[in-house]
Image 1 (tube, one colour):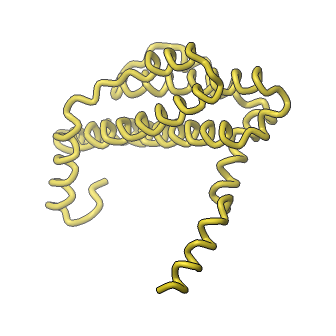
Image 2: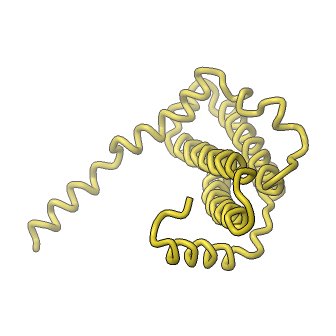
Length: 188
């Protein structure tokens, strides 16, 4: 048993594994390649309509917050911003959640019109669950970055831009669980 503890302790000392390094690269690449403004495409500023309008509105807010966090990071740290690992990790975490939510929304929206009845309800349920989880993780990372940057303005913006009513979340989770149980397989 003591040998296992020594091996485990060694693994704990290797902090920056491949996943950590990749997370550090994401925001740095965005900054160096100048793709930040492309995150906020012109369609983003139009009203969120159609299926999943509330979720689309949240996604737009998340993108605006990401852009504000990144701009503030560059303003505060200048060319050394990419060396600020703690902030880079939080920016990576926020961008990952943006990507995850946008992917879920696009996939659900594409499939939604091709199905009817109960299947549409299942898509609504899965979008609610994904949105709730992505929002939670996004807000946690964004708030951490805002505290690192010591910006009360960003903290207030995070609260405003990420408002989301997850009413019916438990019902949505149960609906997905029940459908999966009945089908005994992946339901989408």
